[in-house]
Amino acid sequence: MNVNTENPVSITEANRNFSRTARMVDEKGSVVTLKNNSPQYLLIEFNQAQREKSASNEDILVLSKRLIEKNREAYDVLAK
Image 1 (cartoon, helix red, strand yellow):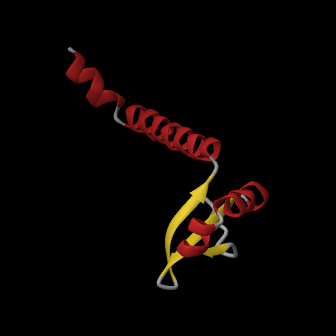
Image 2 (image 1 turned 180 degrees about the vertical axis):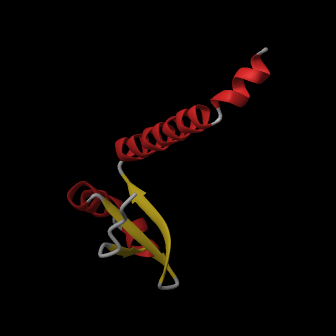
Image 3 (image 1 turned 135 degrees about the vertical axis):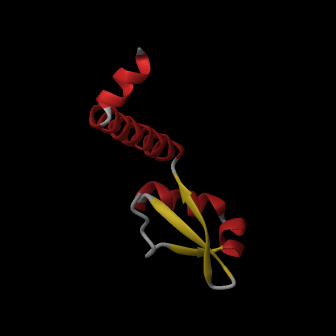
């Protein structure tokens, strides 16, 4: 996931004006909230989180298929 760290917002500001913070997410893709001047939380659209989750699952499936093909003989022996 690419995180744009050029959109920092303090937790206090996000709390006071959440609608402005949400608009920033809509415009820029993400907002990093700061606590004590350090990145603490990442605010993203729900759909983006779902896409990231799907991508991770796809990566696992690709890896699984590669490992199965690499170890095909062992699986065949175990299947007997």
